[in-house]
Length: 58
Image 1 (cartoon, rainbow, N blue to C red):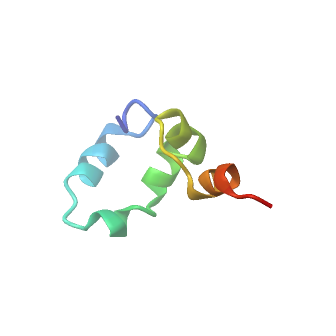
Image 2 (cartoon, rainbow, N blue to C red; image 1 turned 90 degrees about the vertical axis):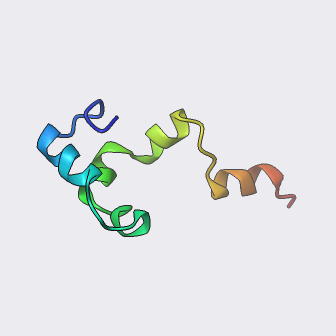
């Protein structure tokens, strides 16, 4: 999927085979460039801010 979002194949292999945990690699430049908020919304992920705006009563 990272290749689909325009990341170089060498970097994809290096990133996929890292021994670091998910939390540690979540803020890497590769992931930040390939999976932005718009892409995550298109994939169906719900953001807490959006959910709060839906359910909050002012």
